Amino acid sequence: MSHHLVVGAGGVGRSTTAALVAAGHTVTLASRSGRVTERPWQDAHRDAVEVVSADAADATRLASLARGAASIVNAVNPPSYLTWDTDWPPVAAAMLEAAESTGAGLVIIGNLYGYGRVEAPMTEEDPMRPAGHKGALRADMWTEALARHRAGRIRVTELRSSDYFGPGTTPRTSYLNDIVVDALLAGRTPFVPVGRADAPHSWTYVPDVGATAARIALEDADSVAWGRAWHVPTSAPRTFDEAAQDVARIAGVRARRVRVLPRPLGTAAGLVVPFMREVRETRHQFERPFVLDTTRTERTFGLAPTPWEDALAATVAARRA
Image 1 (cartoon, one colour):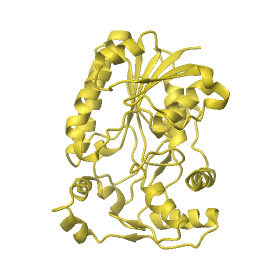
Image 2 (cartoon, rainbow, N blue to C red; image 1 turned 60 degrees about the vertical axis):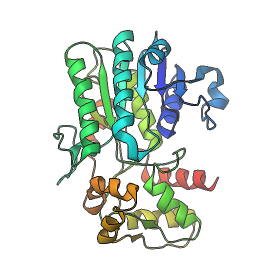
Image 3 (spheres, helix red, strand yellow; image 1 turned 30 degrees about the vertical axis):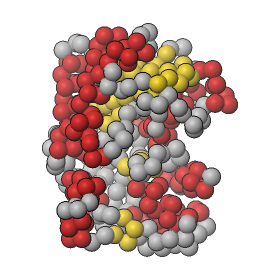
């Protein structure tokens, strides 16, 4: 049995915690507020998790919590999409400092922004070619962490997944949950702010992120898991329209075609709506095929994505509840 520090109590942090304690380990789960209302581990593993309050940018606090831990899982999600440039650097620096001072392996929950505009399914070997400042920020975070790993100062890995869906996501973190599933369950037509309804897109199930993070956090110090990025096992891509049809069938509700805000209107809206201005950098992800290749992770660790139909059924049930 080993102990782990999970920082961030959103859907990924909670699913990682649940996977770790289900495997027989203990977890300190840290969030800014120290309050976690959804606790999927509560019935079977109540005493295996300690929930605490911590500022993710406070390296001293993180180091004290990580003392004796086998890993630190950085599952932080800054509260505002508009302030990444100021929110992320101190958090990233604190995580690196805490990992270096305690010897805990650092598992970073990353994303795909660093790859930029892609023309083929993404693999972990693809270069970082960010299309804007958010992608550059995430790429720089990984570059610095990897440099410290190669210098022997820390052990680090980064897990990358596509847009989340599934039970336990926090508000405004899942296009599929917040816009498609919720609209259909409410009898409304889904309306997305960017993209094309017919562009193939990978969707990553949040419990699969947690399962992968836990699997790698438990790897030995000399494992191939460290010092490289891994793609979280993800089902075959589905377009917005295909996903909406699947949700309607599983939920037993009327099927509706997804509507998309025309691109020129989205560009114009960015002049007055800060969020629409910020999503310009990533709208290419929804306007052309955006497909994640997870073969290497699946083969290396013997993992597989939760079947699409099962994942959607669990998501529908959770949103109804």
